[in-house]
Image (cartoon, rainbow, N blue to C red; front, top):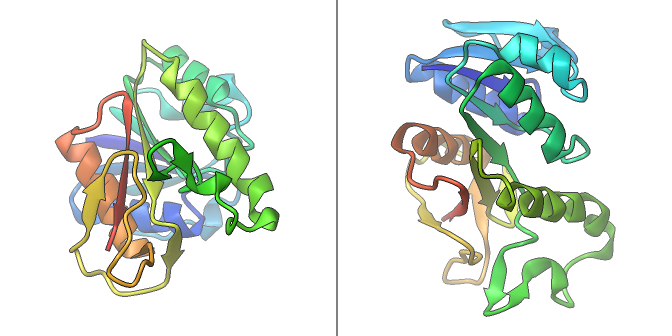
Length: 202
């Protein structure tokens, strides 16, 4: 497939770009600083600003899907408009863990232990997911990761779920950037969560 990755120079975006390339996909890797995008066979690095829907549409036209690894200061409406203009049918989004449930009806972001300093970064992700849930034209998927994404080995072994935070035997919710990328590209290829959210953790 031909896949556009937005935010391809960032930590998650660069791992997703490498994972796509390793599986033989053609990648249009887009970032404000394209020189920071990792080089790999099948990867075309382009400079672009995703806040401009019309300009972004020109960059992603002809792709089978877009994977956004952007921060959520770019609104869902902007990305969806770009996809519709370009005729791209699928959007996969790297989200946050804040909106995952830790108990029925209780989101991680609403628990007493959720750090206040993280909320300004987490709340836009919560809003982004809510905006996607009202979208009926574009086929979207929102990937809420483990609570902590960290440097670590590419194990290829993790658990997946939907709306509940996944924790290990010690109560920790973790995944490496490399395995996060595997989970995202698996979803692209297997298409298990159409117009819904999923999560992955060890």
